[in-house]
Length: 288
Image (cartoon, rainbow, N blue to C red; front, side):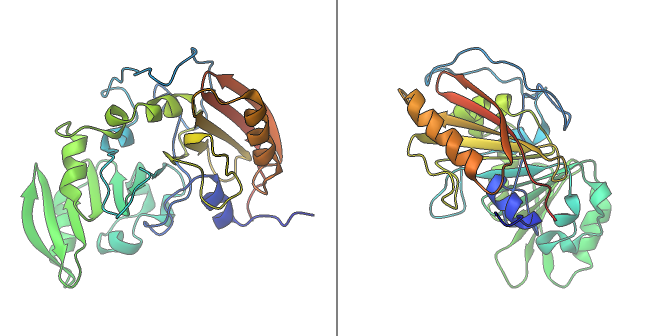
């Protein structure tokens, strides 16, 4: 009998939400296009590896405007984790603990390249006052309207705006990306637009290049993938895999078998192939 997975292990396998504001666990997807956490997936037109879909940046979920292919790490798979639920695991935790914020003060949280971005409508003056009252940070000015600070003993940075609070490093890159002054991830890698449009949930969303970490799903044919859940307690999840061109149906069946036999699914409830994209929906054990 398989051991019932813990809350943390479900997150880690499913894709990645932001634990403690630093670790990846499970994020967002879906056509934004779909902005609720329980929207229903729709059939997508057939696509090829060369399709470049258009994106209306005024209409998509806000977290997508912050995504960049830039990385603060030596190597990057462009991994990102977004959540609009379970925000107590991010808000006021780790580097965001300097702020007097409660989970209900944020609409969502994005973690990419070790950086945490809280999204919502914030009282920037009050948050700046939190920083100025802390002995751990000192103000450094502002960048494109976001007021900035640095930790006194580390290289950690803060950027504070009315619509977002950032903690991490090289934060000006993410601000510039959000403002459209740098290319966004989906502009440099349209495969992520295809993946996000196929993911039906907005509660937890993650995506990255390459096969998932952990070895349970290790198909060599995976170019990129994403996963989404409405919440950890929903008992349902979705996975979208962008496969290498000319991947055989037999390889897709092997991928389905690997996903179905993992400890993080109970039953594959649907499977759809659309060119090089394959979408699975499955029931999942509710974590303890």
